[in-house]
Image 1 (cartoon, rainbow over the protein chains, first blue to last red):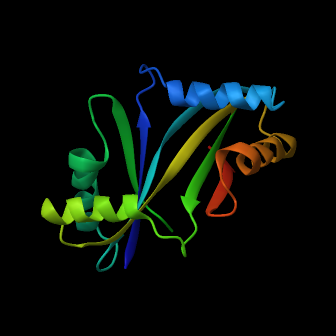
Image 2 (image 1 turned 90 degrees about the vertical axis):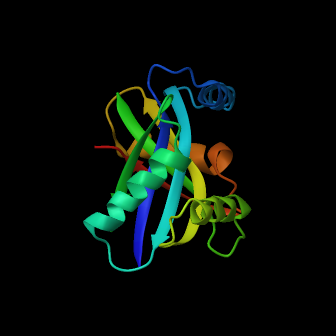
Length: 81
Length: 81
């Protein structure tokens, strides 16, 4: 059983109102040192079989077609140790 | 500028309908090898100053009070290298 993690974040040039709301809330709660927040998604996929290049390629395709919107989001696929 | 990442996932014993929907969609798209999916959140916090134990403690408190619901979610705080 391979566990693959896909992190999906908005591209840096895309405005992130959700992250800004979190930052504002942190400021109101007294967390003054937080200068920026960006919020994204994290997917944990369990794949049948051992972790292999083929499994990673599968996860990469899944990220590109379903998990992320490549127009506005960056994604990173990695095997979780 | 320290960048701290907070990963928030539902606890393993909590049902994750969002992840199940993603898994169903992947199956329909032909990704047969994906046996389970869980979806969570990823926050990237930028903190003023260098990464230190104090910064990490701040991020930990932020995670506990605002970013995660400790009743149903687990969170992990780490400095991004």
